[in-house]
Image 1 (spheres, rainbow, N blue to C red):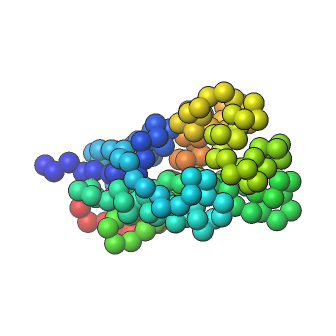
Image 2 (image 1 turned 90 degrees about the horizontal axis):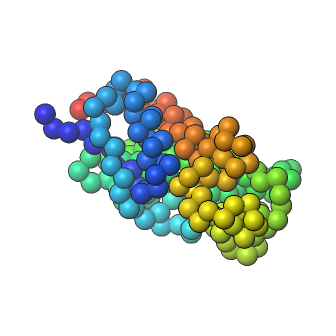
Length: 182
């Protein structure tokens, strides 16, 4: 029997674990192997609009699609939000790709309570990891592969893996309703 494979366009441990957990929740994905691969996003290291974040997820999914049934691109980015305290919120976008069609999903959006961190990202061009380290929120240079800034801010109630999984689950709404023939 041919191994069913899902390629994930990242080597980020938190994101791969989120995909593995999601796969276990869907009978239609039973028996699928999850493989993380390096895939370029084609967008800036810190996407600053919802469109750029979506494009990054779609590009990662497309660039990871090789010898697999599905590929998944996951991209987090800030986007302008009117009337928010800092002017920006962060979101994770998931793009599942079957070689022809994309299935998109999005996590909940969240905002830094401290405008200084957002300013470091928006005005100084730092990515989120650099900004939270420079602001003294953490000294973990791989915070994005661990609990993420969201994990620190929610005191572990919602982690990077959890918010990534939200985007996966909302993308799966479309895939689960789509006619699938393995």
